[in-house]
Image 1 (spheres, one colour):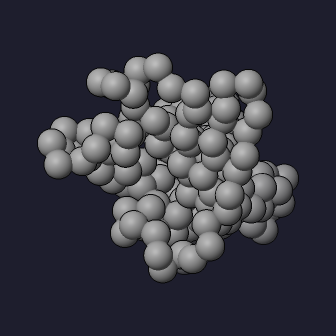
Image 2: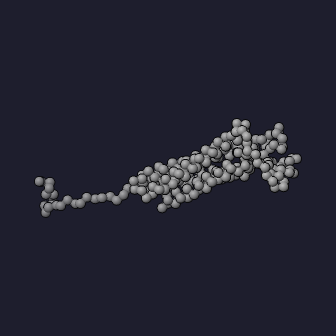
Image 3: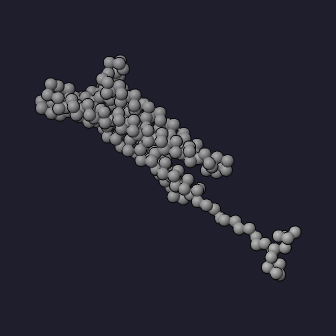
Length: 217
């Protein structure tokens, strides 16, 4: 019962983390304009994402432009895009493995293969969370370095956007969900390794003089 609860909880956390990966990937708010120096009062806000950049006017109008060339983007943005896409794909694979493992619950011939399937799903989710964590931390490190660069103009400095926070939360959910799935498999394996009931053989019939008659046949 405990292993089933951990498996369900891990699946819920992993799916929530996968949804967070897609939100972080689609939102164009990885970098936002920094309000410093002469840039405190501005008429527009700049958002930079993985796929497009947007400019929000003070009137509420927003204009977005998709990046024309992938090779012309900074290295950190290219890496973040690739890692996020791979993490999204691994999340789909992990969900498919989890569903396949859940279908083996009532299958007597596939009971032995269920722990391996769930373990593979947990490892896939953990890998996806680590890839997303690398992408988000890499982008955050570049933002911090550019922010403290004295040679960079104040209008070009950026701060953390909401997508980074979504990415950190989603990576934590994926890693935690994958770990819980793996723990549920270990508990299930320990339960299956518990020795069952010991069968005892019947007592041999003994003759009146105390010896077994079959010993002298």
